[in-house]
Image (tube, rainbow, N blue to C red):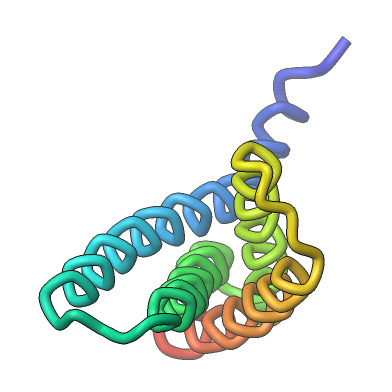
Length: 130
């Protein structure tokens, strides 16, 4: 039987990760729509969509790491990396659902998510916490 106090403790530990994931997904959707708009208006050359996808994924992971670490208030590198791993799981689920499972691209996306979110976590702890 789970005690009520242990449930509260678990939610207190998961709350920063949920805040980071929410911020990252909102940033990802916003940046994806913005890059699609720029792509369609400017008539960008072939292959630009992949670059814009990586840029928006990196910025979204950085935003997720920043908000996750700022919500925790310490250990920005650790909490940012955890938010990046969480963001990568979302990308992995999307790749499995769309049956677009390319190993090289997923490894690049993993490194991008963890490095950008770790940098965002350090920034979030240093600049956003009082």
